[in-house]
Image (cartoon, rainbow, N blue to C red; front, side, top):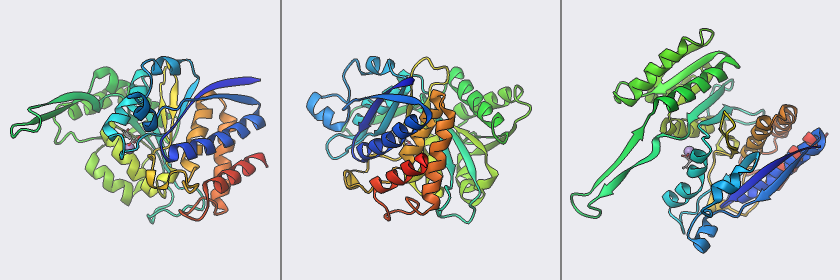
Length: 348
Ligand code: IPM
Ligand code: MN
């Protein structure tokens, strides 16, 4: 039987709850479709930080490299560890170390889920640059605490980084409805964003079958609310993609439905799968977090591992649960009840 080695990093808060839920469904998918998930769990989290003074051991990245994929719940417990410390100690280094430069986030309404918009027929695939740009981590502070204090944070856009993410966007568009929208702010940011626009235009020559639109981030925010059905694949920088995908989550009914995959396209390292939502300390451990985003992210992991049939079946099972009203509205079903509904739909 085929077997895949999965590194589980449940992390903090509801990350733990939803990782357990996702693994329950993914294991059932393996039983049905004839593969095993050999999961090893790592306790790396804010609790781990308080004990060890680091979010993960110094050889954490080396340990993860041996796996076929990484599944992450959520990271952050700001009451005890500042977010800037916990995220730069775990999630962000993993994305960078394994060159997971494409962060893929699908936004569409599941059956039975009521979004806040009039438009219900949208299917957007957001491709967020995941390793550089505004979140490159380049910068510094001087004269801290003094009147003349200066903080600088520089966005880094490399030709390699920009080309590969836009090319990835074109490839995704080619496999879908053949429409790519590149999001920048080149009217105000005259170096990095003009550069991004130029690279998009250069690459467009290789994809004559794909229609390209250029939009500014502010106009795009409005478009995602007013006419989301006009969008297909959207490609954006790290910061812009981060913001747009929370907006995407909102129009698809909330963060409980927003899945994501941090992909290393050349497979030189493992890719990582995680729901878009955070650790939500206020509802942690109460069996009330919606596990659907986490299970959907798990389906994206199966797809990446080459188990496309199982991935499609998990998605169908999610849809049959939400269509029956289970997990489709906040506060009506417990985490384990939604998980059970998805699992039994999968097994039926
Ligand atoms: C996300 C999150 C992270 C990000 C944070 C927690 C650093 O918001 O995955 O969208 O911005 O990448
Ligand atoms: Mn975010």
